[in-house]
Amino acid sequence: MATQFLKSLLLLSTLTLTISAEYTGFVGTLDPKSIGIKHKKTLSHFRFYWHEVFTGENPTAVRIIPSLLKYNTTTFFGTLGVYDNALTVGPEVYSKVVGKAEGLFASTSQTQVDILQIFNFALTQGKYNGSTITFAGRMSQSEKVRELPIVGGSGVFKFATGYMETSSLSFDPQTRDNTFQFDVYIYY
Ligand SMILES: *[C@@H]1O[C@H](CO)[C@@H](O)[C@H](O)[C@H]1NC(C)=O
Ligand SMILES: *[C@@H]1O[C@H](CO)[C@@H](O)[C@H](O)[C@H]1NC(C)=O
View 1: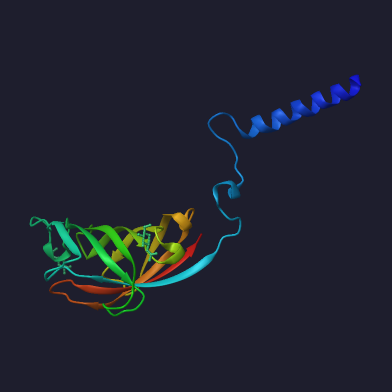
View 2: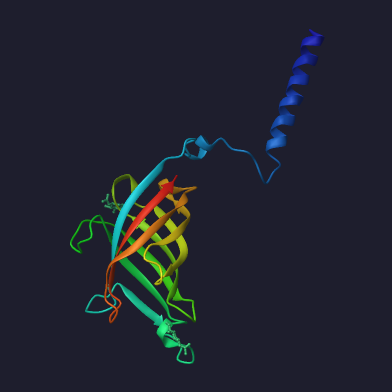
């Protein structure tokens, strides 16, 4: 009886030790399932198109700060803007809308047209409704295909990693209105 008691006491203290090793009061180890994260990640390829409009009655993108005159204005250095562009499944402007691209852009090169882009794809369809993918990177006009990293996500895209490739399907150098294709390769 006494040894039984001693044994269970020993077991208890080992158990307490294991728990305290994992949980120190401000950090603990979790089973991913306990916060709805599946162990095995999925790799998906999404294809979207955006339609960015600076002109007309309903522009989707605006320049907040114009390029600075004291610098070479052909590179638009210093321009800062914001956009809320429709994301569609097809390249046509009337194609089905599946989300929005909400973001900031800034011209950050004095020698060529390089754009720093920070934006979210906020999806609105089916199980992706309400989930976002966040990107931050460089779109250089000197590159036909531009690559941007995924820096994270929310909703079904929690813990997301990956990248996207993007290129322009149409671009008006006068108005800068454009349609871009996005191929997103995402692990989540
Ligand atoms: C301004 O930038 C353009 C390229 O965008 C370049 O061809 C030109 O030489 C630059 N001008 C000056 C004064 O640096
Ligand atoms: C997406 O979610 C919003 C907010 O919960 C809801 O109002 C909307 O109807 C949903 N859209 C689709 C297409 O399921």
